[in-house]
Image (cartoon, rainbow, N blue to C red; front, side, top):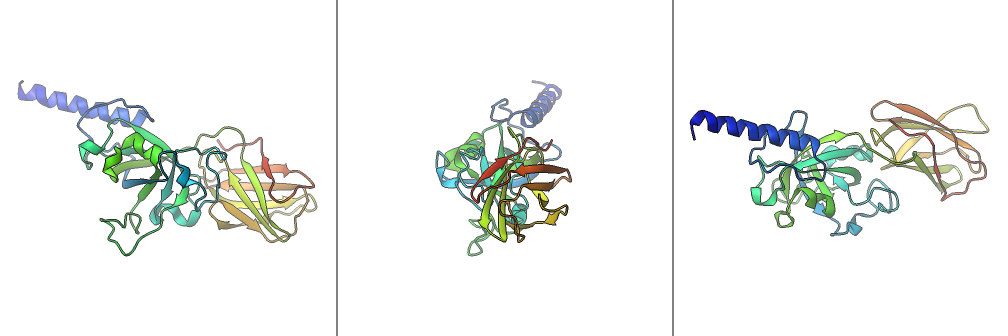
Length: 270
């Protein structure tokens, strides 16, 4: 084959790989051996945990509890310190692909991406170096993915693979949900099923007995608290996501509510 034709063929393969990674999600679309990172993507590494059914991923540092019943399923990940941002990243969605340019080809599934939601924290291990076991040590960006999600892009025996990632809008069915926990003078509200940005920047509450919005504070993960006495009152929430969009969920919690109840809104972030 003439050198010019060979070079043209390599260029075509590289373009095919870029298009496949940008468009595919859980679907193999390319077998090209070329792997330049698409524009806008960042580099990280990824491991997996939780077992083949992801049952070991339940709970987690975002507070979502049972990820099956909450609608997050097995497409989830624990984020390293550099990405977790003290819980401010809970609920964010990331598209991830194996980085064939840096990976051992035998452990990398080409032309495939998977989208995961941040539901947990991957703690650092300072007893191990960041390039040999301490994968979640600062300042490393790292995804410890639910095993079924990881196996969409990597081969089980690889254990750890270099990846490319980027934040993407979250797609959810139905409205935002508010679970009311805590006790009198300590209202702990878990916010779930947030579309678009997926994560919450700030939150306020207003009761039927007042015209004033009361700022809430992030307690942990996706849980926000207020120290006001709100028991049994009709409640509204004003929520701003991390992309700056604000929605008011008027009277979303009905009068006479009890701790432990969850209320679904008709509104959703777009």
